[in-house]
Structures are given as C-alpha cells and as structure tokens.
Image 1 (cartoon, rainbow, N blue to C red):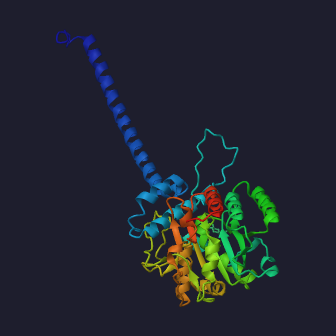
Image 2: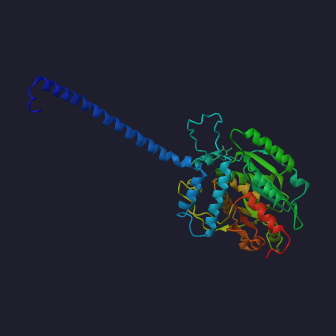
Image 3: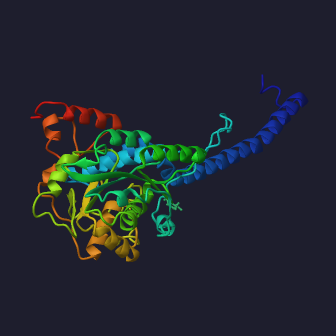
Length: 404
Ligand SMILES: *[C@@H]1O[C@H](CO)[C@@H](O)[C@H](O)[C@H]1NC(C)=O
C-alpha cells in the first residue's frame, strides 16, 4: 500500500511530516544525549569530590573506626599482640571522646533537610601543630590538694568532660582510697574544654561535680582526640606547678582497671628509682604510621624518623615526679604530634633518658578477653570495655576469700 501512494500528495505530506518529525527528532535526541553527557560529567565530579572529602567526614563515625581497626591497621601495625591491643584501646578511647564531640547541630534544624556534618577532626596533623600553644590556662582547679597532704602518688586521669560515668566508676574503685599500702594517694581528673550547644550546662554540672568531689582539673584547650598530647603536657604542667612534692605520678586512662595495691607494692620495692624513672608497658621500635587515613597518622614534617624511640604505652605509665618539669621544659624544643605516649618517648630521648622496664613486666597488661579473679589480683593494669566492668570486676576482686 505504501508503494502505491509514493507519489500522492497525501503521502508526500505524510512523508514530510515523518521527515519533519524526523528532522525535529534528530536535534531532540542530540539534546538528550548532551544532557545525559552533562549529567554524567556532573555526577562524576560530584562523586570525585565526595570521595575525596568523605575520608575526613567519616572520621566522625565510630563504625568506620571499627572498620579501620580490622582492615587498615594490620598493614602498618602488625606483629606484636601488644600493639594490636593498643590499637583496640585507642579506638575505644576515641569512641568515648567522639561521643563527646558530636558537632554543634542546631536542634531546630528541620529533619527533612539533610544536615551536612563538617569534619571535626582535621585529616592532617599540621593544623594540630598550628593549634598547639603552651599558653593554656586552668579554668577549674584544686590548687590546695597537694598542699594539705603531700601525696606519695598522684593518679592523673585524662577524661572527656561529659564522661561522668567513668569518673564515678573510678571514684568507687581504684580512686576511692586516699591511703593505700600506708601511702597517701591522690586521684585527679584532667579535662579539656567541651564544645557544642550545651557548653554552659556541661560547665555548670562540672562545677557541681567538683564541689562535691574536689578532684577536677580543667584547662581551656579543646578536648578532642587529636589534642591528647596537649592534655598530657597540661597534666605535666599541673604536677610541676601544683604538686611538686609528690614522689610519683601516673598518667592513667579512664577506661583502665588499676590494681592500685600492686602498684604501690611495686613502687615500694627496694631499688625502684626515685628520680628519672618512667615505667609501664614498654613499646620498642614501633613504626610511625604514615597512611593518611589512620587515626595514628603522623606526617613526616611532624616526626621524620621511621620508628619511635622506646616509650611507655599511654594506657598507664608511672613516673617519678622530677620528670614533669624536665618534660615540660624539653617539650619547648620537641615539635608536638598527636600520639601522646610516643611524644613523651621522644621527649625522654631528647633528655637523654629512657623508660625502664617494671620489676615484673607482665603486671602491665593491655587487653584481657575475660575476667579472672586470680589474674586480676596479680596485675597492675588492664584495659576494660566499660565503667560498668570496672565496678563489677573491682567488687568481685575485693570480696572476701582468697582470689587464687
Ligand atoms: C586543640 O585545642 C586548640 C585550643 O583549644 C584548638 O584551637 C584546636 O582546634 C584543637 N585541635 C584539635 C585538632 O582539636
């Protein structure tokens, strides 16, 4: 039928219409193609930018930390079970800190509009270095505590401002007694400044807590994971200026089990140095982490050597109280980096000093898989999973009857 009508006007019209529509269709599909292409390009650019910036953004999510713990650490930090325990520990500490670090999202933000959370942890340590100044001030203090009674040992516990649970658990357990094995022991908590919308309320609560317990020291630096070196140096400064008469001090994390009696027994062991003494779980030849997405990443411009000098693991290290003034002094010429325990190691090296193995190195334990009363009666430190665990294990250890 079509063949017959080839010459007809109607057909020509039809063909023109078809041609016309064809001619009109051609640029249309061109246009669609271009739009599609443009869309692809835009999508590509978007994906690329997102993937670049997502790393720092993901730093905010504990789940990602869990992921990294299993997948990105073993490359750099393999071999010794000590360091793996250390890694686990650090992740835990960070989780606690990060719950305190939820960025300031206005409560009035409509729930339908996705809130883009800005990265709170800078990916590189350079900003950290720029932020580091030795001009921090104590905004909450207990200057009298060492004047009224000269302690033999001061336990300095770095803790996030909002972590009341950790402080309360310590006050009920290893931080409870002011006299242990006949010696005066003092437990104090070191806090940085909290941030977020509820700062005023947090400060009010801290004031009340301090009125009740008289054991909070707070400085005006921002309490973040990357500022832990500042926290440690502020602890040292506090010991120098507020507690120079103490014989020993210990920096101990808030998620630790501390068998305080065994620690005192260790410090009373004849032959334990009274000066230039730093002990704990020793780390030898630990490689500096150079993969940028790691929590422990330290850029070469901050610390250039491939390995750290021998240092004591940050979970808990004990030192004679002549060291803080030396460390504070030498830190003026040691470029800061965010790994607080390794930084103390570098400062010690610069002072020509080195940590000493404890009389019984097996007493400084990092990670335990399960509670064992007999075991916990012999050790000095263990890393715990929660404050609730601390109270539970402590109560069990202190119940009557031989532990072994
Ligand atoms: C560390 O504290 C300083 C002083 O409060 C602050 O300016 C800086 O942003 C903090 N750095 C990090 C990485 O949190």
